[in-house]
Amino acid sequence: VARGRTPDGQDGPAGIDARARSVESISVLMAKSGVEASLRRHIHAALTEGLISAEEIGEVILHNCIYVGYPATWLALGIAREALDLVDAERPAAEGTKA
Amino acid sequence: MSTAGSMAGPSGADLRDRILGPPPARDGWPAPLAACAEALSAGEVDHLWDPYWTRPGLDARARLVASIATMIALGQEDQLRPYLAGALRSGLLSEEELGELVMHAAGYTGFPKSLAARHVLQAVFDEEEA
Image (tube, rainbow over all chains, first blue to last red; front, side, top):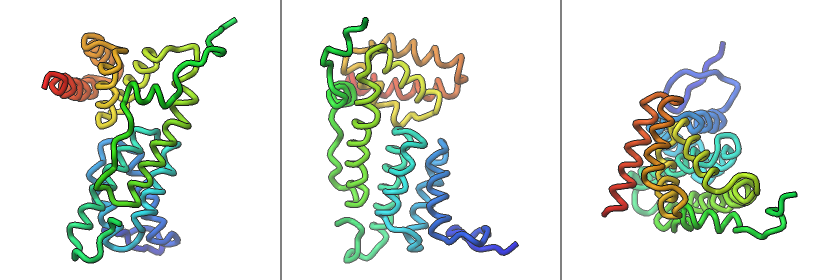
C-alpha cells in the first residue's frame, strides 16, 4: 500500500492530499471530547505547514456544526483562535493573519 | 386546543439573550475566525433558539434542564458554564436546583462527568459571589 505523510510526520494512506487529510483530522478531533490539545496542535501544524488557510479552518468548523452540535463547535472555534494566535506570535510582525 | 401557538412568545434571540446574554464582542480574534463566530451566533439563533426553544409544549425551564443534562453527559464543560450561569441569571433554576441536577446526572453519566460539572458549577457560584 502506498503511504503518504501526515503533517505530524506520521505515515498515512496516499490517494488523499494533505489538505483533505487536514480537513478530516480537524473534523474528527472536534467531534471527540477530551482531545482539545490534539486539535490545537493539529491546527497549529496545518497552518504552519501551509496545508490550509485560517478561513478554511473556520469554515470546516462551521460546516461540522450540524453534525456535532453548537457546544462542540464553539469550543473548536475557540481552540482555532488560540492556534492562530500562536502562529501569529511565532511569525515576523509584518505578516500576521489578523486583518 | 392549545392556544400557545397563537400567542406571540419571546423570540429565539430574546430567549438566548435572557439565558446566555448577547453574544460577546470578538475583539482581538483573527478576522477569518471572527467572521465565523458571527455566522455561528446567527446560525445558533436561526437553527436552535428560534425553531426549538420557542416551541410550545415544553417550557424554557425544562428545555434548560435538558440542555444542561446533555452537556454534562457529553462532557462539554466549556459550554456548560454559560448555561449554568444563565440558569441563575434568568432565574429559571436556583443554585439548589442546579446542584441537584448535577448530582442527579451522576447515576446516569458516572461520577467523573458529574464531578467535572460540579467543578464548573462551583466556579459559577464563586463568580456570582465575587
